[in-house]
Amino acid sequence: MNPRFLFALLTVTKPTVTALVLVAAVSGMYIANGALSHFNLIFCALISIGTASAGAAALNNYIDRDIDLIMARTAGRVLPSKMLEPITVFWYGMALCFISLSVALLFINALTAMLTALTIFIYVVLYTMLTKRKTPIATFIGGVGGALPPVLGYTAIANRIDEQSITLFLIIYTWQHPHFWSVALKYIEEYRTAEVLNLPVVCGVAKTKNQITIWSILMAVTAILPYALGMAGFYYIICAIILATIHIGMAVRFQVSGLSVDMRLFYFSIIHLPVLYGIMILDKL
Image 1 (cartoon, rainbow, N blue to C red):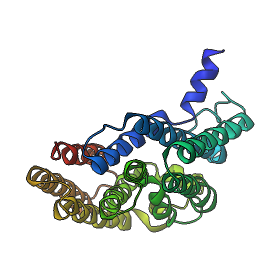
Image 2: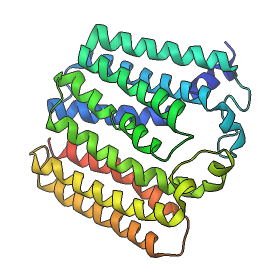
Image 3: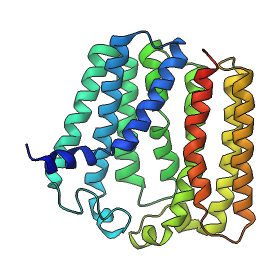
Image 4: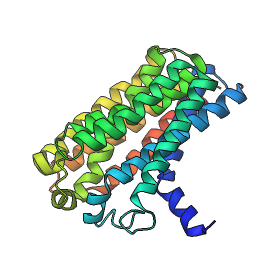
């Protein structure tokens, strides 16, 4: 098979995002079990969650192919650069989603299958199709789907939703907003040209900076929950406080500055989340 074609099939699934989704899912599995000993179940869960993320990403590429062509940041993606036909990407995405739900239903449990279907529906339909271009509220809707992977990992092992899985959800949900808005400010003119009505485009730089600070504080609050619930111990809470203090400090500094973009905040957010989850896991060893 043509290597270029295979590369395009891989690229359209946003493999970096899918890898991060799987890391979050594994974190949920570990928190649910205190170990990673259910190897067959873990393997099936990784297949299901990975193909769900890949399939949803392919469908996102299919739906957004028109605005991806307009924006310089995305013009090199598979569909704008005509590496694949749109119909190929559509059916590829649908097939991956079907595989994901089938594996979840047959080899994991009904709860995880239902939540996987919900994740795909939120990201593809509610976010990408219905709200992304029309309202800043889309970020809050899409954030629900983006915060579910650790819950999927948790329910795959525990087959229940409880305060621990909700806590894992809330940490990622609150993290996503300052993370996305930090980089959205950099591409505000491209979003405006493509008529994507996200927060920076609709409300401007100052209000976006204010929201970044507010949601950085909210993440700091949710990061305390694992300690309060006994999910993690002393080392976790110390690291969580240090990370939150740095994040909030950077957000406040950005807010009071005359800058319209500060990518340092974006890059720190990339570090913040995996370190926080990593410390949570290490604290359970």
